[in-house]
Length: 202
Length: 202
Picture 1: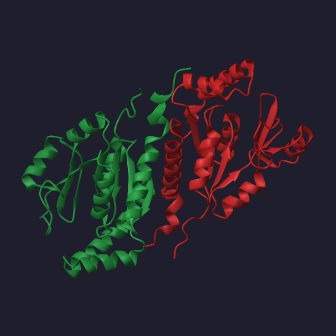
Picture 2: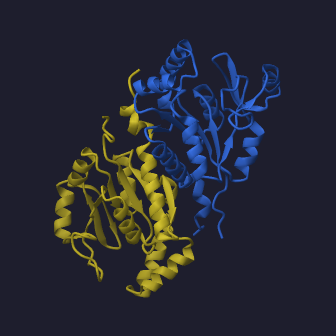
Picture 3: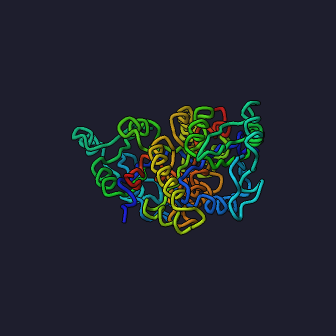
């Protein structure tokens, strides 16, 4: 019996704040229970309902800067005066074991991952329209107006990075967006370079 | 409302004789009724159960050579002393109308399509093993032994072209192979270059 997978895929998911990424990821992980979701480290304060070790590993600025110094991060970025970063070792171990790893990171971090792991699959999620994004951010109502306009401005900048991603998914319906991402992962598994070990030497 | 698709995808399916491509295609077309299957032209004799205009457009050598002379073919190739080719105009019209077009062609033709349409999606189908291919060809029992060994030799040569394809699908279970191809097509629709028209200019 031929081994189905030689190595896990590294999948990067980015998208503007308010696009509904967490909901899409929850749906995705429900369907693909074999996949490992890498919980990022951050120095920002938890939002209402966020749990340490689930949404993020919440750490102090000192701890985070120690990780940077010891080169324990695959990527990190500063965004709205807070650090966000991804642990390197956990990811390497999972990929080597043939497990797909999902990263939820912003555009700066995604560019670093692309540079370090050219075979990573980069997916950008957008809302059906930019007006809809503004509606969603206002509807969430956890942030004051100046924070929301900061996020919208940031979203505009992120949009400029879309051409450096591989795939674009529109989060109109969550189930549809998750299904498209699952299709993307299946397709990437089918790439010739990921399947040459299944070809008999004739 | 944003237009979902600007242009159809050109999908090329290749695989050795005996791999079960026709069955996979039938399953695929059943699931994706919006897709257009391009019926190739050929000068070979119909097999038992094959119908003109369904499996192939069966034409004489003279007719085929006229099409070559008038440059009416996207690609054509000679295989086992018979011509096989694809009509250009029909395909161009479908793609322009946003309809995906599926071509069932061998490796030579696929290489021509790749050269003329770099964005075509090339999928190669293999059996679970080469021994299984031999079993299937013998099981079909429509061909004498020397034809079968000719097909196996040809299959060996085709295998060498796998690295120039985008995707590799193993036809172990037909439904699984068809599902993988459908996932590939969904993923290709999600490619950033095929979706930039969905991104608001912010």
